[in-house]
Length: 119
Image (cartoon, rainbow, N blue to C red; front, side):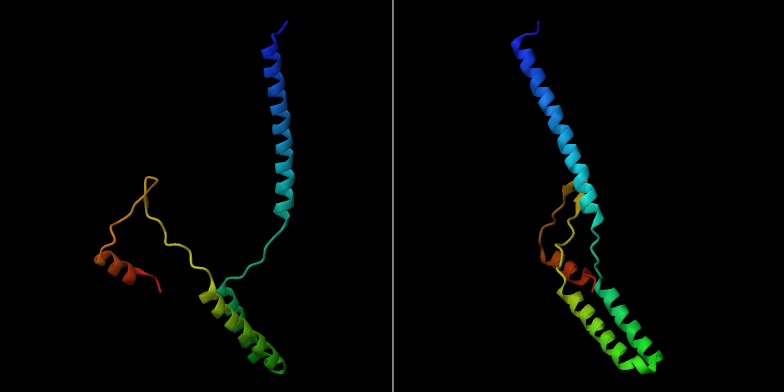
């Protein structure tokens, strides 16, 4: 006959197994639900290219020039604004073997950073 504490341990392990199975079912259902949604996003470059393409299409299709050129110009301006309005990420952290490397902030390093930026 098993001792009382052994029975309690077995009950705890059984409850933990049931909880693990239930959370796994929830995870798979959540994956299925979240995996079906697709978010459409356009980069600023894609918007600008679409605008230019519509303007060129307007030149080719003379009767629709005003409509296509207007929509193309609006897309181009929206892409231009989106380029400057997007959130800037923090600068890339330099790492060496998993550790963050920080250089002293001297005037020479600031000078290099200023002229080393991609513009």
